[in-house]
Image (cartoon, one colour):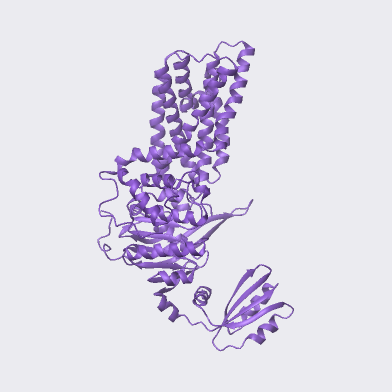
Length: 331
Length: 275
């Protein structure tokens, strides 16, 4: 019996001190071994029926964590269980109980129809042959692809592919679902529909672990959220607890052209400044400066930006996204 | 989008022990792989054009040199060359293609034993090579006037199936290493020509140096082509067919061990995706 008796019924997902290191090499002639610690001692517990969000920037360790949970990667150390079953020792038992939906338009057979894609996976999941047709119709209808099942996937737009991913993840009716950035690249209407399905699944009692870049998505869907940065959990709690726990002071946005990196660093070095995020916007750059509450920085920022063409500089009210940025940049 | 499907009150999974679903998993993989590859212009060209060129050279040489072996002997050798090319390119290409498409992850996550998933893919790939067999026989008959008279037609049909299965299983052994190595296409290129030569597909084994024989005996194309030639031209096809079966069982055993190991290593080294 693979289940750990102490865990049954307590947690749907348990992660204790998970570490995951990637080993790689660099250089052409002189090969150097490199170790990258993608996940550094993550611990979390998800209750049955809970919708739990993992929020973090690219490279934070979200996908590595979800891949370990889905049995695609072995942990370097630590204990990981899904419904009390160890993902290292009993991978196949875990695989029967999980569905994995990932973002992007890959992960489907383009030359096959949507129905053939689902039929193949229905066989791999050993679904009863006499029930496959009905189940495939049900999941296609659920994701809004009814009537499109016989079309080849290569003709599908990104949003339709994402829905097909979703249908495949639900095919075997798993009690635990992992969604890895499920709305990435999907148009706003499609993304809203995907979020609605996730919300309905949670209401139907599924345990869901969702990774996302989008603060509003995590905020609107998740019962609890863990913010992850540089392989560590930097904050964990309900969306309300996270918002309350993060102090976000003044936010100043600067739209400018050709800001040198050393100037960005000088701004970062100002004692009142907590973080500076830069974003390229076609020719221009958008600098989002988070500073301590009550800081009067506009004059000093303009001084530092002397010689740079500044299009706009303005202070604004902090948003949830600012709170998230404050958490991940504080690491 | 509509409301959620009704909750599943009865078990969705097949009742009884898991192995009951295994043949269906392999057949399903075989069918969909065959369906996809048959739609791929590249795969069909590899299976068709190359063997026709080699068959033409060999048959023209046979006619010019007044050799004793019949044209069918060369046509069958060229057909097996086509199946082998499809297997080495198909296994390396198909698995790398699956990785590019992001398919390896969903396939590994499925609770089906990964060896059965790979087996369906490699058997499907080997079956595409039947294009080559049909094409070289037709080409030999139409262009060179080869007599398509089969001494033992049922044995010939059995030899075709046994050869395709054996090559598919050999593809499983190769494919397991292809999953692990991201640049497996380079390995495919290196494996194509030596096997053509060593297995006596165009030149009889007796003309090759003695040190190549042990290598030929462990490779299924040797026994496959021998069985096909014996069934078509005359001779005893049953002994090479038996060896083809023995080789298939050995490949399956080796494939199971390798795939298990490869699956474990890919979970350690994160080789299922391009990153």
